[in-house]
Length: 115
Length: 111
Image (cartoon, rainbow over the protein chains, first blue to last red):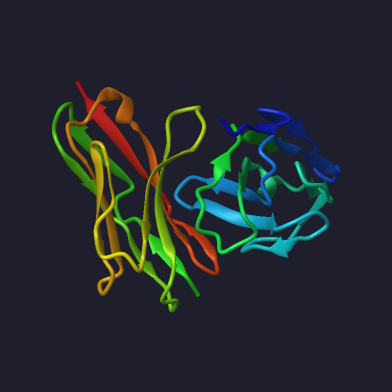
């Protein structure tokens, strides 16, 4: 089974801090994704990556950056955390570089609170 | 722009009954894929069913089936013989050039 592991289930940070959310997948998938999930808004794509050192902006990239130095690891960075970034963050991966017709495999999510 | 709309924020069904969750989408692409995902409370999001837009036949996975109406851009999920374990958030997802999820429908199953 594919396993997508997010480093923390719950995280509390302060405004202005630089925050790192880590995600690791063990199935050699090319595609990796970061979403945020908010009630009533579903999942919104922040960034995705087709390959190592490759990244593409999603729908809501402002205030975020990503890093993919190794194929199995995709990090989401909040450069200067703000309270409106309090949310559930989901990481996902899928095989093949595209088209994106393969189902995504999700991690358990990180519930991030910015105080 | 690509949008996915789930017009039912919450639905309720009696155990063993059938329920249909609606999803409409808007896309200018001719080739795309549609998915339904399930997110049980405090648990991981998992795939329920997938439909390829160029296939006319509706996808079926055991008790789960879709009613795919391409011209109407509608992709509803039917759950037959509902079970308590079906209680979850359900998300409709359009994987075209843009990766777009709907807002979700919370399904409650009454014993």
